[in-house]
Length: 441
Ligand code: GDP
Image 1 (cartoon, helix red, strand yellow):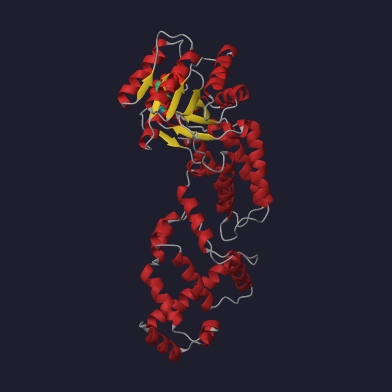
Image 2: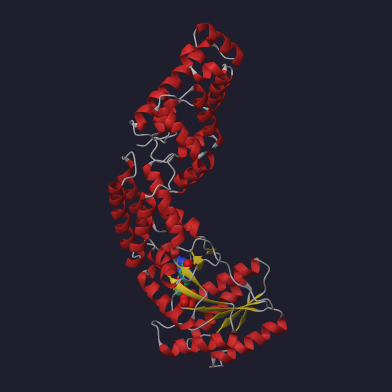
């Protein structure tokens, strides 16, 4: 799903990796690639324009966290904007206060309406509803049979009447049956055509007026990209749909429909079809979809962890200290604690984008070592923590004893501290970046 888009977006982020800081110039370069990637994915050009403009403004503004690398900062903004583009929050179905709830499924022929009716009915039954499917496509006998077969497979009731040629009457009778027999959700599978036609639109408007549905769901084939968006727009203008079901996402390498349909129609995607099997329907979550599109689940959870663990104010204070060469053992300990609070170290290191796994192994920082390092710093006097230079061999002996380590461990820690100081100074390049920095390839 969305493979080619993911690949291109990832390569756009790579362009920014080598830079120390987000600047107007490098943002511009990366966004040029993001724009191309989205256009190639068949996203509506106006949507792309607005999108990149929003990302640019936010990335240039300083609202991003300084504790992340420039690449990660940009990924964070793009991820949030992608989520926003697809609707921010996931939208569920509206139910009637007095059952039955009526769902009208509309869309072009072949979009996956009938299959979706079956999938949705099956999902609702799992949630303790009693669904009734209605075959309202009077023009294609095969469509009625298809729904009946689905009903048999799923053991879900179907209202069908091959002899009745008026879909209005079919729906009326189906609703009566639902009332009498206690079906609390009625899913109406309407007729589809290959193209939009006014006669069909009128029929659907009539059905909507007659059944007063809680939902009019437009079923769209994701693989048709921008066409799906255009058709969605037309259906929405004619019928005021309440949501979209995007089918065949499993075969969609580009993602254009998923990314533009909400922005163009202002109607949320409520469900997505991800395969032909009857359990392959999912509720749509914009946030999860955005991270799927970015193909960077790991990086995103890493960013989330950093956000949770890092206090920006503290990070700025640290930055000042590094600049003034006032980074002490006390700060070193705070950093170690912060790092540990983010979770098991090996998992964390695994998540670091582009991290050189071999080099990380050589670092040999394991959990136990962290505990030892902290214990050593804890055994120092406040004065020693602030002025490490005063730690002579006598003090080292006392610290080793106090922390249950030996003098070699204390020496090692002091060396690591010196190295960290040096590394930080080098990384700030005199311009300032917090010491908590993620290695890049
Ligand atoms: P309708 O004419 O709108 O009722 O469309 P159908 O329900 O008959 O579906 C048309 C074709 O699309 C069928 O072969 C379905 O199996 C297939 N289809 C529907 N939804 C999905 C989906 O989410 N993924 C895949 N791969 N195929 C789907």
